[in-house]
Image 1 (cartoon, rainbow, N blue to C red):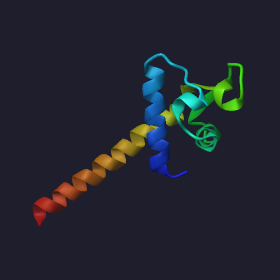
Image 2: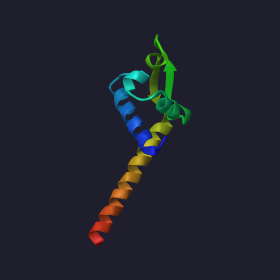
Image 3: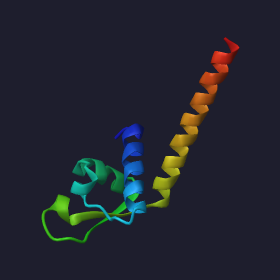
Image 4: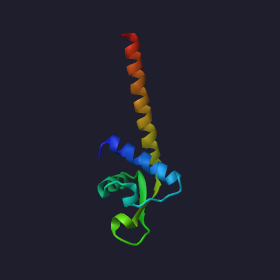
Length: 92
């Protein structure tokens, strides 16, 4: 999974969790592989808490500290990239 996909997934999950929802995989709109990748990298915590098939049963319980760190790191990298481009444009 590329960093941009992880960032988009984590931000969407953060927003859902912030609103008080523990979304299922189906409610997130992500593939099983995407969520499994985030779980494997220990960026989010999931659990089986609801009846039904896997996409309806598996919920995202929380974003782990490593997930929040990843979001912050990606924002810092993007901010630095934008500053560098702005400095280059002003110098040119």
